[in-house]
Each structure stands twice: as C-alpha cells, then as structure tokens.
Length: 161
Image (cartoon, rainbow, N blue to C red; front, side):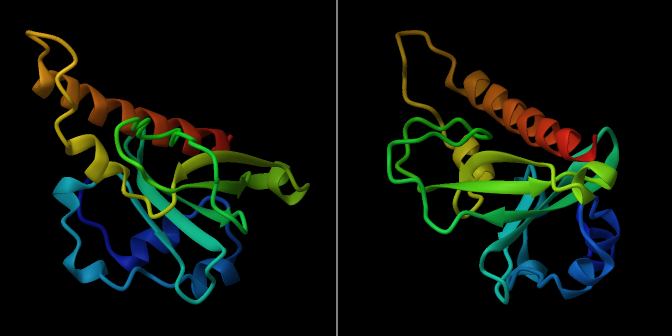
C-alpha cells in the first residue's frame, strides 16, 4: 500500500457523511505505520469504539469506508473473511457497513467477519505451515497476500456499488 495522509483518507470515504468524516479519529500510531507491509489500513476509532475504518486502493483509486462493530466479538471458531487465516487464533469481529449513495441513505448495509484488530496484513505475511513435502511456502504466502487484497477490494466495491 502506498503511504497516505489523513486528508486523503477523509476525502476517500465513500459511505460517510461530512460530519462522520470530520470526526473520524486517526490511529494513534499513524505516523509510524509501515505502509509497505500493509495491504489495507484498518483501525477502530478511539473516540467511537463501535466505529472502525478501512482504507486501500480499489481499481487504482484510494477508497475508504466506515464500519460499525458488533457489540460482541464472535465467540465460535470463526474465520476472517479477508485473510482467511486458519492457523492463528485471532478474535474475529462482525463489521457492518452502510452502502454508499441512495442505497445507504435507505438503510442498506452489508457485513463481514474480519480480524477484530485488522491484523490481516501481518497474518498473511507469516509463512504457512508445511502442508506436504515439496510445498512451496513462499508462493503460498504470496497467494495469500493477493487473496487478501482481492477480498478487501471486493468488500469495498460492494459498499461503493
């Protein structure tokens, strides 16, 4: 992911009102983020803990969306829909997003299960376990990174409409 700034994030929000965009709190560690190791930027708003934001490039355009966190984390062994990690025991959270435009103003939303703290980029960069003799773990990791990027972009495309 290319480095971005706060102004670009606020301008890229596709499903937020002007007030929501203006009151969005950036991540505390924003200045220290290593964008080279991120496939998307996701964080929970510190001032509004039920609100989260994700940002990435979709079809060459920086795209951001506000998400609403469910009150409780998923208690069962659920899998993140984005990184699809099955080896780590990460908490998974249900996030809902208001659709952009008239559909969103009518109350239409979509939802997904995602890593509660948006650690997907870190998860997919870990070498997967050896599945069988001769298994190419490096290629598997690269494919997981690409799949994560595709999954997040597809979710944002659904929001955008």
